[in-house]
Image 1: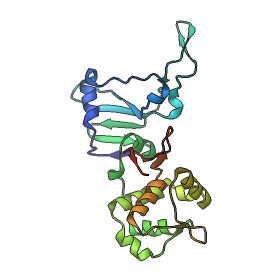
Image 2: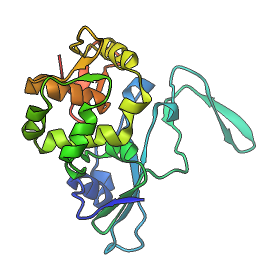
Image 3: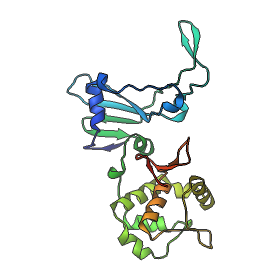
Image 4: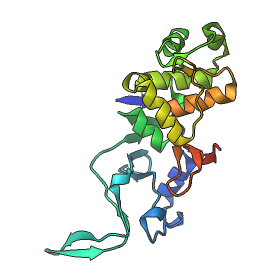
Length: 230
């Protein structure tokens, strides 16, 4: 179990718990409008306590509204075409008295933006990152001093997630093409680590699995922001 002390819980979550009738209703006529990132539930026994459980809602938990769904009720099945969600018995994050607890950084980071809390890569971590066979780094000695706090956190996460160990260079390049992410490949079929800051950030966003393509459009987005990348 990991924990983040002095976690900055969103005011919207506290306000929703304190005044649930004041929250805007979710109105969805089909599953495409049922865009739910996560659900949360307060479990405190009195108002003085702050205990909240969170569950990340995955695609497989969405009940499609364009198909028949059967529910068991009063010893028989009833059918509906309304969209819905399935709530499982798992907890992806738990908040208590200013501390956030979680087992998987990947799932917790999809509920909250945890980037500012993540550890920063050391100089040795950056050397390890640049030594992967998928990269060509022109000058390692310039990469280390140029790496700011944001870059070091992203590199640390990429190393910890083992995406460079678990995926071949060909797969990384092909997946980038499918997303429309432009990677510079040299004659040895290696990914050239960009010297340009903007391109470097785009590469790190991609390797951290924080770029995705809209399901209804061809727009490419950065997670947690909905800011169009191109």
